[in-house]
Length: 583
Ligand code: FEO
Ligand code: CA
Ligand code: CA
Ligand code: CA
Image 1 (tube, helix red, strand yellow):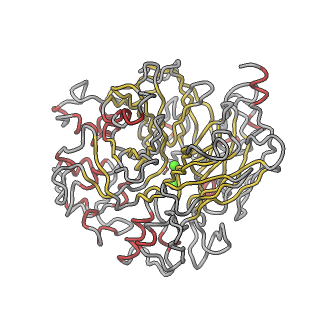
Image 2 (cartoon, rainbow, N blue to C red):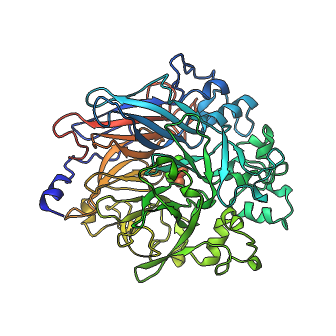
Image 3 (cartoon, rainbow, N blue to C red):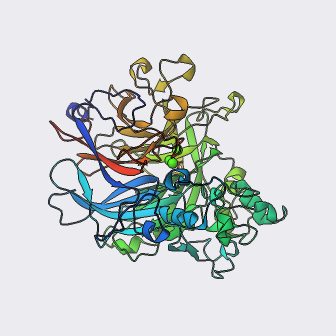
């Protein structure tokens, strides 16, 4: 790296400090604005948001709840490069206690459940920037689209059409209505969105109706389907969420879903070759030989890190030729060795322990019960793997483990080196420039916590930890053009009694490891989906569940309008000097 390059990538903003204000705080010289809020209408005629008067029909044409992943897809023909695009946003889940006045916990009404189903999923919306700074969304754009908990989706790949997938309404095992708990995601080099189904277990109930000798029972149990009623009680209103009536429906969730944001008629595809687990994110890179590689973590305590390597190669000249790339290939799970090396272990039916003797009769069996297959291979149990992203400057892969307070000190290993890991850590993986490699080296990049508290054992890539900002529960990350990592957090209200935020940290040079706080969100929220515009003049992020922990009668937040809290996507820009964020 040249001296000039490292100088250009230097972060110069003055760090902000942790706070409990009910607003977005950014450093001096920066500004922020809201782009789109829960309930904002996607059509030019509406439907207008009227709190307390939601209906499923209205919600289906409005921005959904709890925005998580944010991806910007450029459109041609903007006033300047990067000023017009499509924003793809995930809606992970709903907080009915903050959505409906008088909501009765554990006793919802049918219409409320129907609204919640429409508030899940994905929004595709056209956005544009007029001049410097603020971006606006465009009601009425022909690209605007909602994909919800009831949208027709297709299952593709090796598990599609298998007996696991068949239900009383779908004898083909290939058609699913809806995508749920869309947490983080990714963008493919061929311009599609990958949206990840994470904690799908919470929508289903009544597992105990199945016999414990039924193979489906064991799989559902491994994925956390509740034995009795679900917390949301959706199974009372929609039989597909009742395992006693539709025992296979949960197998149709927990996948990575591919969507073409440029085609509003595209039927979302659940890509079963990538495995079934609580997918946090899906980051795609092209290997040396042209194969597509997708990294994805299973966000639960003591679960695993995976990568998929396609069989076919990426075709940069024919976009649609890539639309089946994610349907065949090899899924791997990571094992970290104590000597700083590691291996990607293939999850292939017939290889090693993945045989009929252990209950795997086909690759569909391996993919539906990915967790059990990974157990048998001896993969490393991680501290809740959230985002995994590649650094475009040094080519290394960064794995975010958000926390795991249930890890006991006698369960630590070199890749999960702290017991009672309340603050989380980030691992750096080095695959020697080839994403298809089956071996890697790794090291710990960050051990998060409060540097003023010696018990936290903060480590910042060798940088003097006493100089860094306190940081806890890292979740989603992204990189700027100079290889600095930008980290969004989810959990600081619990660990620090302060709001979640965004931090920036160089990954090279003499400030490698120097963590600085850049943004703080309003009360009760987590921050998700940090995403730069291609010119790095704008940072998009999602303010998810503002006010969570409060109620409508005892509100914790009134962000962003001074009324009820509304999950929203915001933008941050620099309002003086060099327009590049961080400069
Ligand atoms: Fe939905 Fe793992 O965060
Ligand atoms: Ca979340
Ligand atoms: Ca997350
Ligand atoms: Ca999280």
